[in-house]
Length: 284
Length: 282
Image (cartoon, rainbow over all chains, first blue to last red; front, top):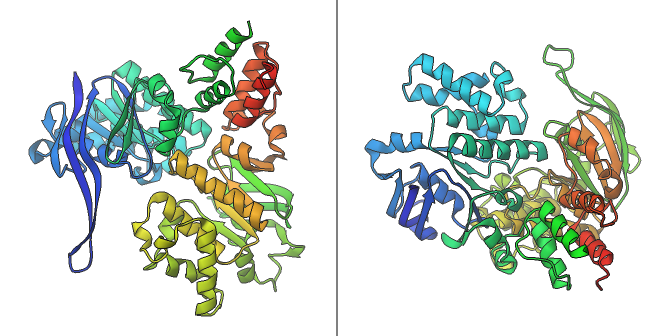
């Protein structure tokens, strides 16, 4: 079953001068067709300006397509009456944790979403509890978000989205500003939510290593899908990715370079462990 | 060239909010060096770099630039800020003028140069930044992410700094853009002998570019050494919320599996050479 369906979606950014005359039009998305299966972990890659973030904003109705349709659990995001349902179904986490945290206490921040949805107080308390436990931030519940590290703040932002019990969470470069530990924290949390709660994850990232464990990798270019497949399939296309200003995980890059230098190493290596295994095999 | 001596910075000293950014940090950076500065979020990196061009004053200790105490009474901090240029995180948010060229001219004009001189400086800085000439008269807001980043760096280069401090200059860029910006920085060092201090969360990037790596942990200088030496402390780095580069981990795993390679490799290039050697491939 598909949780998200984009059909022939177009989106433009139009800039106008002070007299409201159009100066330039940028086609951010053009005729994008894309379906995302419920319960899957999907990674979206693409160079700056390829349309990734625009697509993300369409998924919970922050932007509405110029033409074409975006369906979230079969609800059209264009329909204003059901917009709230769309936003409760597809939650968003953005790049900068400081821009998404609003309350002075962690638990109040997490409660903000469900409060706005009109959930009864007792259930809110329960949801906040569960959400904070899932992201391992329970011990900080009465602390000020200001005192948290970047990774911790980002986990609070994820808990805030979780408390709305979405079926799908879209994370737009959630680790770009984090140190290695914070990065690992956020990724681990996203995978746990996917595995244990069955939440569909759409992860937008510039970090190729983060895409290795996804079910599916989508590469965007010029506002449409350029490549679509498993991490193994996508990361074997090294030259194509480089042309799109992307890269491959270092283990894959090294395997590719070794092969080019004449070492008969097998294809489809994405992780260090796979590389070590293949080299050990070769040594025999 | 830059020497920090017993630097300590305490925020809100003497109040209930008192908190220590870093304590008793001493180091020397030589002319033309490429320094990588790493540390977990909140380790004091950003506070530390702001002391190096006098934007912040230490609670104790001081900084010497070319032998002179920059916090001494008569020291010309304004002139120092032209010599020690700072590129902050997401510098594109600081672009403001009508055209890229005017934006880049702002620094030299502010230093008291004439319009013609400022224009010359800006043009040469823009060329150095690698932004294509047809963008010089564009509005900064029409540029792509990577181009804006170049324009912002040109704005600092136009003051012809001897030291360039960059706080996560590649954050938010795609791998291609990231590479371009880091190569630009490496070239500034190579061609202009500009001393570079690069703050980064990417161990792989600092491993690739830096001569020496400075590691801050909880407000103390944990390591300051060549990459091979720093990344041999894998466990300590992990305890600090950091990591070693991917390729250092690979070397560990290979050695454990009986394929012997230099344990201190940190880049794909080094790993490739070592593995080919181990397999006798030429």
